[in-house]
Image (tube, rainbow, N blue to C red; front, top):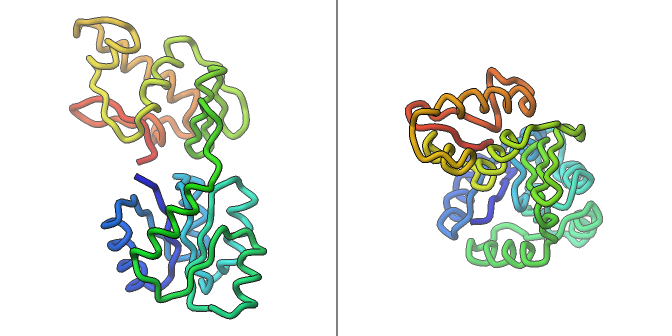
Length: 224
């Protein structure tokens, strides 16, 4: 399911697009300003940004430039401004496509999927979540660009959780996959290892962003 970040200041348009795109099978996060959109972009990188141009504060052109400067996330501009000059400026700012409102949801969905097909994917074996980068081939982890030294068990735990963000893993399941134990007696091993892992990868281990507790069930990898 493609993850979209919709940045649109009009609440009615934003809600309508969110519902329509969800019906077309997209996972939609929303922001009402350019500043909020950029924060969400870094916290939970989407597969594509759907961007209105006329935003309060940081406008759509500047948001597009910052998104493009930050990486390879594709941008589709969605705006009522359909003059040739606006289209040229939008594409020059780094947009991958430019859609003029009003656009039928089916057409917008098709344009989004066409852009996603052309977009380069992440390097094989690399998982990027916020400021955390996990290279599953080289078995290295960095946070804010700095290497993180993990023990083999901590790394196996991180690889297991991060392969399915949002999915809850019970302690028994983690014991079986990470420690290759098949009984419940050592569940504290999981809790202790989670604490050590959080201390190394989280900015605030007391309020973890990546390794989150699901009370009564186990742990999941965020942000979700």
